[in-house]
Structure formats: structure tokens, C-alpha cells
Length: 540
Ligand SMILES: *Cc1c(COP(=O)(O)O)cnc(C)c1O
Image (cartoon, rainbow, N blue to C red; front, side, top):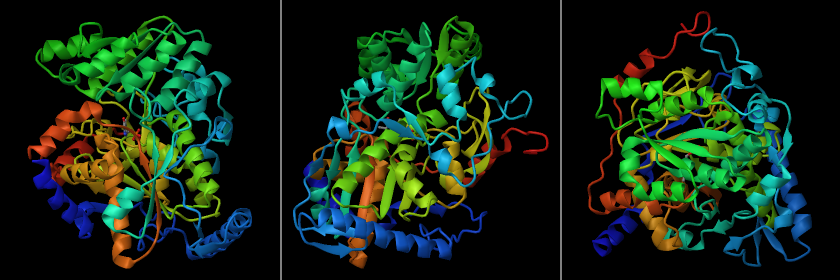
């Protein structure tokens, strides 16, 4: 089976299958006068000149640093070093960043404020206290502090699985026959198998500091539940995870890991909350949904003394914690005199992408450089490429504050898709705003094309990627193939967010030809848009 398939796939990929991702390509709207004509080159002309100037300056600075060691040939602001760049670049513990970077501090225009759904007025930090830990609620609302110290205890935990490696994909480059240089930041080196531990550790730590006695959350695919269980176990905080019932039944090993770390799992909907009981009364055989699990977890938190709710993506605080990915990547890239022409990440709620691009977005916002920053999302759940920029609830249960974001409508039900971590109706408000203002691009890719890229990558780089991560791989491969056509040796950096060991059913479906690509019709999207909340004077 596999040997029949490989040459086919290899041909598909190597013949410059550039239309693989052509389902939809978009650049954020040009409200702020940015040109949308040239995807990626979204700064106005004056800024482009400035950015060219900084590119040259950047090169000169890098050159002074690196020429001490070896002669270099400049290439588009990057250094081609005669000394071979190693396959893996690991920072030392001392080189690890000690502060998170808050992108909002450098944004020209801030995201629109969160709204209290009851009043339609901007939510205050106090509105968040019943649900979130105090410190995390403050981080959520902090638009001005550029750098925030990572607490010592969090750094100590980080050191058990960080710094994460920056890897040069020499073998992938060779297999593609591309002149491009491909790098990836690998976040799968921990038991949760994803970047989610970066924020789970921080959130559990602040809960402990506040003296909370328990936490609740929901999990769909299981990565967030695992990461949070690891973190809560370390800080000794009891955790209840509401796990979508169909995942609970389909992923017994995810369950076993969460229980290994002492997490208590309740299949959702359950009899432990009013929300769950109401849904069960109406539909006793339901297989559950993420929205319902969120409603149960939030209800449990607000009705239990000393208990708060935590969330693993979308929120500003989560993007803040995930900035460690980009900060480390930048230090590692700088250390070899490299600067990416394009940075690519998969996008579910936007946390890994927001973290990876953070320092490069900073360069873009401050005019130091102008790399392209690209989100890759599933064609089955295309919030950036086909969604509306509107106020919407963050959950299907409609109990959270309203956020202005690219959304498919909180009632949108994505088709069953094997990248569970990307099946979210909305997108981080920070990334939504940056995309809207033309600082980012987005592409949507079909699931079978994603798994072609995943298996191709696994064969050449030996890491079995998570289906979510494979969206970024698809994006990077397509960029590299474009370079093959044009002969440009671009530098590509992408985020490899996790490993796919718990997704073997999905790989199995792909290998046996049982995977299909479902793309929602305009009518289906329109139906969900019609249900977007109406807010007098703001969104009629
Ligand atoms: C959850 C998850 C994602 C998507 O979440 P973001 O918040 O968009 O980063 C991507 N990759 C993996 C492996 C995940 O577990």
C-alpha cells in the first residue's frame, strides 16, 4: 500500500503541485489603505523603502557579527555561510527568553474591545474575575506592557521541555529539489505532544499562586486536556476535564494519559451541570460538542468555590504565553545569521501562530523588516479566508464575552475533520485585527493534501506530525515548490506544533483512501452568519 503510494505522492509534490492550496487565498481587507494586490507585500510603498533599508542594515549588522568566523555571500539580507548550518539548533538554558512578548504593545491599532453580552458595553477586567484567575484576567486586558516577566517557577517547568529545537529540513529540501532553505520550530517534544503545554504551565501556575483549589476546562481532540493535566499535576491542583463524548469514546489513550496525571475526566454532556442535563434531556444520544463542553466547564467553575476555568487558545493571554516559541526561534535564527522571508503556521484559534510570528510581526509593525506571515487553515473550517470580521461569542453555549474576530458564526458546525485542534469557529482577536489590517496572509487547504504533506514530511524528516501541524507543512512545501519554479532561495520558517501518535485513525483513513475533503458551501456559511449576535449601535 505504502510503496504504491509513495512515488505518486512524491510526484505530486515534486512536480510543483502549486495549486494544492489554491482553495482560497486571501490577504486581510485593505481598510487601512494597504495594497491587497501583491499578497504578502502589504506595506505601503514608503514603508517598503524603509523596510528595504532595514534589510540592508540587518545584513550589515549580521555580517559584522558573523564575518569574524567565515567569509559570507550575501543573499537577500540573509547570510549564506560557508560553515554548514547544523541540522538542529538548540539554545542553552541561559539563552532562553525570560520574558513573554505582548504583541498588542506594538500594534498601530488595537483589536476592538471585548463586549459584555448582557450590556453590549466593553468588558472590564472585573467582568472576567468570576471566570478567570486574577493575574490571567489582567494579562487578557493588558494592551500596553510590551514584555512580561516569566515567573521563575514557570521557567523551571519550561526547562523540562524547552528550549525546543529549531530544525533545518535538509532532507525535505532535497526531496523537494527546492533551492529554498526550510526551517521548523518543533514543539512536540513533551508528553502532551504539542505547544499547548507552554500556556498550560503558566495558567496552572497563576491559579496556584492565587490559592485556587481546582480548575476546569474542556477538551475536544485531547491535546489541551493532556497539557493542562500535566501542569495541574505538577502544581498539585485538582483538574476536571469535560471531554467531548465522541472523543472520550474514540480516544481512550488520551483519556488514560489525562488520568495518569490525575485529571478527572467527565464525558460531555454529563449529569453534573445544568447545561449538560438540559442537553441530555433533549437529546440523550448526543455525541457532544466542544461548545457544550465549554458551557459545562464554565458552569462548574462559576458554581464551585475556589474554582476557575482555563482555556487553551484564542485568548490574548494564551498568545502571550506562546510568544516563547517565536522568541526562541528568533534567537536561534539570529545565531546562524538567518532571517525568514516567510513565516508559516497552522491556525485553529491562533495561539501557536500568534506565538511563532510574534517577534517577526514586531519587526513588521516597527518597520525593521517585512517578512510574509502566513496562516494555514483547514478548508473545512475557513475562519480567516471565508469568515466574517464581526463580534461573536467564543463558545457555542453563548455564555462568554463577545470578541471581534474572524468567525464562521458560533453555530457553525465544521464537518468531521481529522485536525480536531483546528475545528474552531473563530480566530484570536489579535490575529484577526492584524489580518484585517493587511499584516498577515491566510490560505485554506484540503485535508487530503494536508495528509499527503504529512506522510511526505514523515518519510523525509522522520517526525510523524500532528494533522494540525501538517497544515503548516503543506504551506511550507507549497512555498518551497514555488521557489523551485522561480529559482529563488527563500528562507522559510514554519511551526511544527506537535506529533500525531494519537491520530493514527486519521492516518489510517488517509492510507486506506477513506478520507474525503468537505468544503462548506456559501449557503451553509451564510446560514451561520445570519445568527451572529445583534448588538444595538455596534452590529445590527
Ligand atoms: C491545538 C493545536 C493546534 C491549534 O491551536 P492554535 O491555538 O491555533 O495553535 C495546532 N497544533 C496542535 C498540535 C494542537 O494541539
